[in-house]
Amino acid sequence: MAQTGDWITPRLYGQPWFEKPILYYWASAIGFKLNLPAEWAARLPSAFAALAAAIGIGWLAAKHYGGGAGSLRSPVLLAPLIFASSVAGIGFARAATPDMLFSASIALAMAAIATVYRRSATLRGASAAEPARVRSDYVPLLLFGAFLGLGVLAKGPAAVIMAGGAIAIWALVTKQWRAAFRAAHPIAIAAFCVVALPWYVLCAVRNPNFLSIFIWQHNFERYLTPMFHHPQPFWFFGPIVLLALVPWTILLWPVAREGLRVWREKSWTHSPGVFFACWAIFPVVFFSFSDSKLPSYILPAIPPLALLCAVAAVRAFQASRALSLEIAAGIGATWIALAIGAWAFARKISWSAVFSNYSPYDVTIGGAVGIAAAVLFTLVLLFFAMGRKMGTVAGLCALAVVLTLEIANVEVLPSVDPLYSARYHAQFMGHDLHPDRIFTFELARSWNYGLAFYFHRQLPEWQSSDPRAGLVLTTPAGLKKITAIGRFRGELDEPDKGILYVPVEMAPR
Image (tube, rainbow, N blue to C red; front, side, top):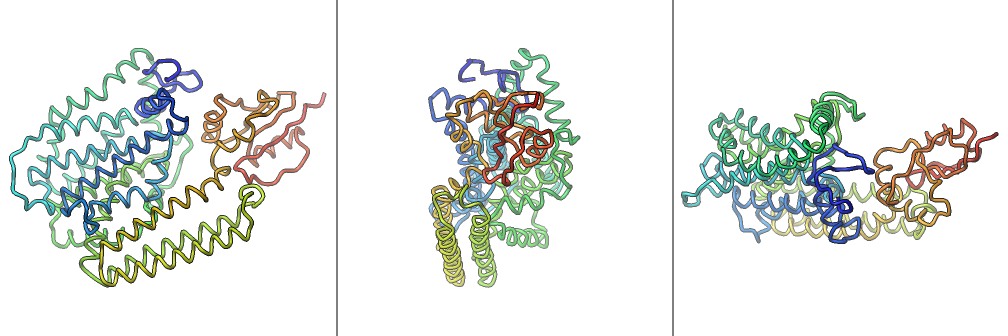
């Protein structure tokens, strides 16, 4: 788009590509137009979207659960911290994909409609005691429709399903059907249409096959059939949610306790927590029935889960010393497990290939220091939990997160980069004497796209009918096929850089 000036039709290798709508492409293309470095242009949209989602759930915590924005004893800062430092938050805030834009749009849309329900006392949180003020709902309704429109521009009709489904099951549970239909106010519908429809209309006019490919193939068929080769069992998203919230997964325990309390007290009708829980539950349930499953599908559930975890953690620390110790011990044990897991993973990797600047001694000492630091953090966390000093506990968690991420950014990620990123391979082969003879063979789609991004061109798929010699980037399975037809007679180790470099020989005459 930045090169051609065509801001309507998404293209891949010069051909129309309708797998996803336009919002991410627009956002990254602006970065390229501003001459940002390529990776900044590709990743900044997700980073800004994650920031918006974090601010959105912090704002919801302030409005529905009270507490000053500067107080670590309230969920106002804890909710964004949990979201931003979770595995899902960190991973998708870096990803050059539309997933975080989609999730942030839904988060902001749900924050807007929650404002409508709070003002009408349908949702009664800690702020319900504030003096009632007669205020128009037109602005939050307009924002609800506009953000929902952005969600449709980010990933398609699923945005309407995510928000509408969450509101529907909330209305089913609480019998608040009249309030639920407030979301379909003409102002919200008009704002939605103004934001979402123009691009769809223009793209359909320019590309007559757009609607059939995008709506039917990449939405309905993706959901109803395994044609995109992502089949998983029905329970797949259960473990994914647990992993997505690491290192804060243990906080689901106080969330469950809060849910049982609301159930026993039968106070769910006006509970904001029930509304947020429905928002979190619906994506997981909906996509569990899909025949195509990827971890990113349930990303819209992570912001409300982070909010619920923050609220439940604050209440648990304020209510019970024993529960405070259980939660602190769980958080600390998670950090220790992460330190041990990272150390064990590092020891398995080929030193010469990946950790070329580190010796086994360095990594062993570094791992021991990391584990010792995690143990110390756990002991300090338990000490303050005994006094139920929520502000200190939250501050320690924030400090641990910042230090851990900084160490990961500086030391860990660059070391394992060759295993997962095409960046290393493009740099390694950037000055190859025969760039036209570099091929891929049976690589995963993510590797092919990554290599094309860093090579600034599409690498062709190697064909066994090609008689000339060349360099083929492939997998162990691909190597076996190349060896079986006699085009490679040597031996290669298992990939220690994510993919194998296989020099194929000329075909025998």
